[in-house]
Image 1 (tube, rainbow, N blue to C red):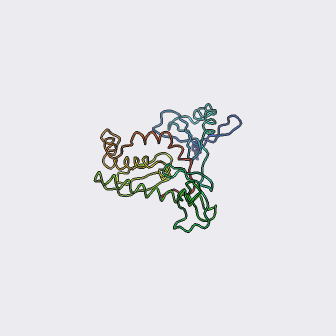
Image 2 (image 1 turned 90 degrees about the vertical axis):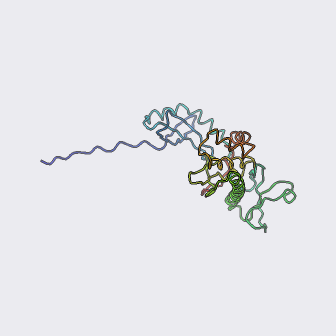
Image 3 (image 1 turned 60 degrees about the horizontal axis):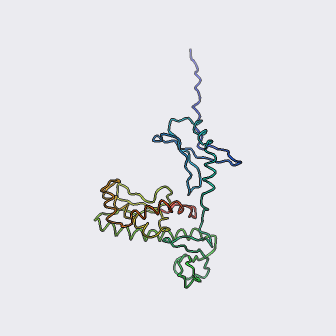
Length: 260
């Protein structure tokens, strides 16, 4: 006799988001499960301007939601303190190598390239990024200009530090990262955030030294830091600057594709 067995439906998958209501606002929270997590944690991401709940892989989704709801006031306060996002529009001020520049349209700009950094004597006493063309193209042109400047400065700094250590860099890649300023692959490729061009030069140079030093020591041992110290005299100052000012750089973005 043939028996028909009913197969139970697969268990429902936890939602990717949690909606938390507090103080008349509804906050959408992204849920992230990780095997390494030992407890529930909430994080506000400055660049994405969103909220992430990280929870242990086997933790109860219900408990995660309850945890987020208990922290509704904290979430609201953190979001209100986020710096205003700057999208490289005409009139915006953007730091270039740590120095504020005002973005201004220059329809008759004849210089090579779509953006130039005009000296004060040609810009009414201000430091200006003069952008050719229509205002609609300004954000992308300014970001492309900053990425080119970052690549030029990082290529120079990395080349200098690599020559001093006698190591070979396979490739330098600029990325639109929001969680780290640089990284080094086992194959010898170095990755950097293009936003380093917004920081003072000593910060960019330190990050270049830091990643080149990883070509000698792929760790953060005392030996690694000794190499970094030989390359950069500004380790402590740069680390302090990044801790205090680094998160603010994440508000600068034209959006769209990554640097590449």
